[in-house]
Length: 234
DNA sequence: CCCTGATTCGC
DNA sequence: GCGAATCAGG
Image 1: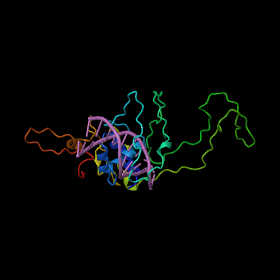
Image 2: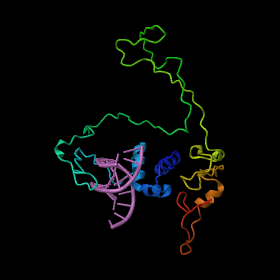
Image 3: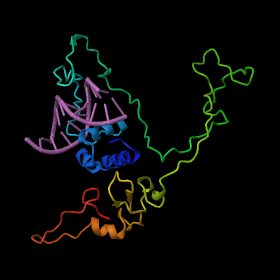
Image 4: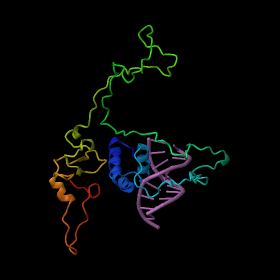
């Protein structure tokens, strides 16, 4: 199984929606819980309430966790030359703001064309123009002032034809029903998309499924019909 | 024991 | 990039 856009979208949504990695893995199928977690971390989304919290005590000494004895791997000849791959700074860092919120946009969106105006810098930098019109690099300049313009023409992506009228994950908003139709990962997986019952995330019909009256004790019935969970609801 | 997510590291 | 193995807390 490979991580297609579809599967990544499902993973992202379910992960952010608070589903456990096991649930996500089961829903996606063909992947293990570990695979889901690993992918989630690789995607940059992480840090949901985890049972194993980082010891942010003053002890910055997690130390070697796996010194040796892996069945798969060949034994290392000499572990003494173990160089730390990551420089773990024990001091509180001033928040380098590493990963800004980046969302996978809808397909290959239009990447902006080269801007004609050289904004972004109000510094009265002195540049000189060389023969041919290129800007000469000043003595202090570290990098060329103008990135080369991509000589490619971007063409609009062609979505799947049968998905044209379906409400995809990226079509969700506060006004449309978020009830999943089908199963994530399937080619035709989409969302209900009806106008929501005001105040609820679902349309009137699916509110009826999502919210059921509490029956008196003794006459209890329900395996609750959760989205993502149940056998096919369509 | 079961569950959970985090991390590592060979592939 | 992927995910099994492993770690570690609940």
